[in-house]
Image (tube, rainbow, N blue to C red; front, side, top):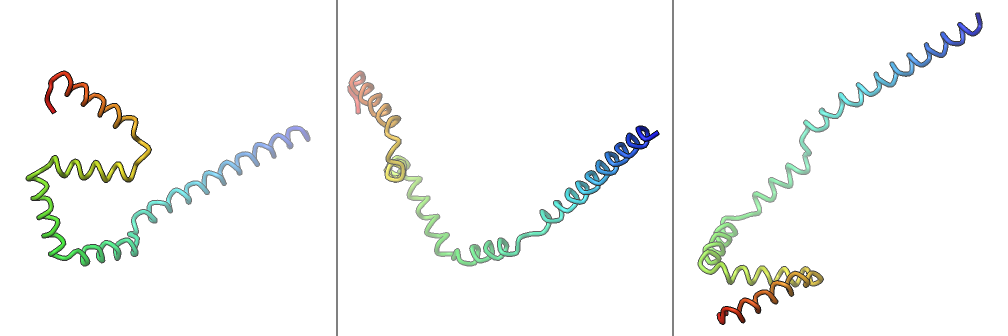
Length: 112
């Protein structure tokens, strides 16, 4: 009789614990979308400030720079490459291989 009662109590405790854990997980999952739906007020304010701070002259200057870049894309590429090399000085293995390949092509074709 006591063994039956002990088994019954164990099963009841297990069922209650599983039910409690399931209920807790439902509440935790249901609250997450509500946090995602509310916009971050600071982020919205920052975006508005960024839009306001960019004046028409800044846009015009950027447009003019892009027009100049369109006229001579190789020059812009070289400037960007120099800037990249300054920022990433440790990545010279690939560049050396490219330079070696360029020299080999120049030797074979006789053109620069």
